[in-house]
Amino acid sequence: MTPADQPAPGPAEPGSAAPADPGGAGAPADWLTVLTTTDAAEKAGLLADGAVELRLAACAQINGPVTSVYRWEGLVEHASEWQVLFKTTGARYPALESWLTEAHDYENPEIIATPVVRGSAAYLDWLARETSG
Image 1 (tube, rainbow, N blue to C red):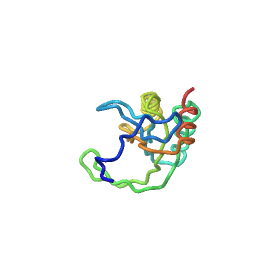
Image 2 (image 1 turned 90 degrees about the vertical axis):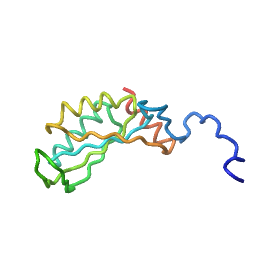
Image 3 (image 1 turned 45 degrees about the horizontal axis):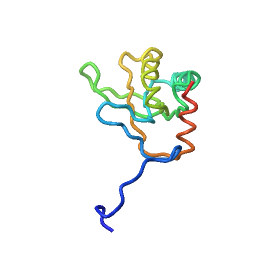
Image 4 (image 1 turned 135 degrees about the horizontal axis):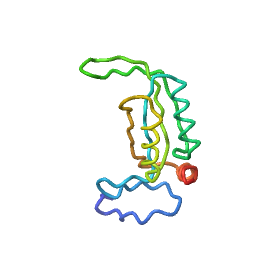
């Protein structure tokens, strides 16, 4: 069967693991992973705890140390950092970004959101429940 012969997919069943639909340019995805880095394991832990306690993220994972190489104020820098990966929803992203900007001690913290395009229905439902308030 060629792609042209295949039936078009129907609407997703409630709770299904259908892809997140960003809804066009600039629209938020249903689910996101959000990355930040910091220069100490203790700081990473505080950011993770705070975001989960405030229900800005359902989960946060800390990885590190990692070596970051970047240009800052005209110089190439090398630093040990800890990555924090938050699992959240598109609806909670603005509050998470705002909170991270305030809570972070970097002048210009890395805050990068990546859409989750697929995931298990049970996990994504849990993620939505944990961030809903």
